[in-house]
Image 1: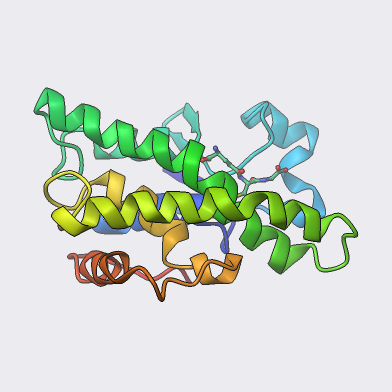
Image 2 (image 1 turned 30 degrees about the vertical axis):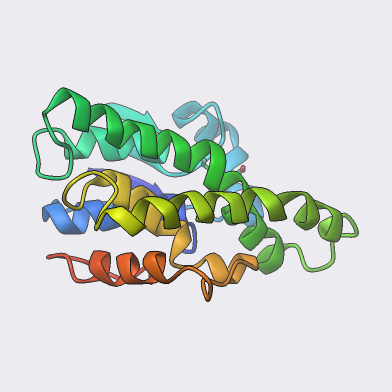
Length: 196
Ligand SMILES: N[C@@H](CCC(=O)N[C@@H](CS)C(=O)NCC(=O)O)C(=O)O
């Protein structure tokens, strides 16, 4: 397998983390998105959407981090077969992509990589409430549950990726003790590896 990867990206980290936990070897191809390498004609042939991560498996090409997680996790302990639990895993992964990542991950990117952008303050401001709202939803769920769906699944991996660095996006977790405890539980899973 080959993974087109950005080392500091949570979306790429999700895939590296699951690969490590499943013990699947993979060749990592680093893409420098700040230099436009995800938008070259050659890369756009791999993913016309111009984004990483992308997984190549024996000629099969798959983009979108959470789709890659689902592909890799099929048949493993990270994706339950029970229909309701299976659907709940996807519920949380869609939540991650629609209600969490667009606020917390993009704020982190703006803070780390767009220091001189005149629009940065406004772009950060419109992301504040959405980010806090996502964290409140997670805190509420984790008040009653150790993981998002039963045991540690790809829903936890998807949400872990940007939540454990949410302070880098301006969302410190001081007021979210249940999230902090869950982060520690995810870190103690067999095969866990840090972001970098
Ligand atoms: N929904 C996509 C988002 C992917 C994404 O935004 N990737 C960023 C890095 S985190 C990227 O490659 N950006 C490069 C670009 O837009 O040119 C996923 O989950 O994989």
